[in-house]
Image (cartoon, rainbow, N blue to C red):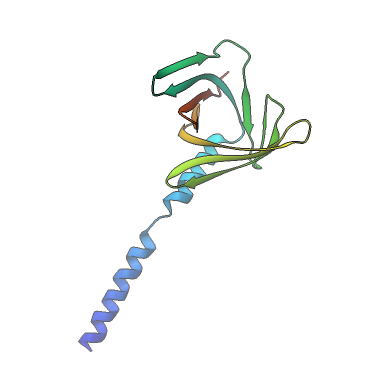
Length: 141
C-alpha cells in the first residue's frame, strides 16, 4: 500500500508541474503579432553596422518607406509589395517572414529579425555579408 501511495504521489507531482509549464514561444509570437498588426509602421532611420563602424541615415520629416502588417496576416508597403506574413521564433529569435509580390507579379521573400516591438516602436534587422542593417520604425506620424 505504501508503494502504491508513493507512485501516486510521484505521478501527481509530475502532472502538476507539467500542467503549470507555459508555452512562452507561442505567447511571445502572439504578443508580437498584437503589437505589429493593424498599424502603419513608418521608417524613421536606419543604421548600417560594419566592423569598421556604424553609419546612420535619418528619414524623419520626410516622406518615407512604410509597411502595414494587417490582422489577416497580409502586408503591403509603400514600394507596392503586397503579400502575406507570419511571426515565428527560430533558434530563439523572433522573426517576421514575408512572402510578397511586386507590381509585376514577381515573387519576393524576405525575413526580418525583431529586436524590439512595442505599441509605438519597432526595430527590425537583417544581415548581408559583413554588415547588419537595423531599421527603426514608429507608428505615430
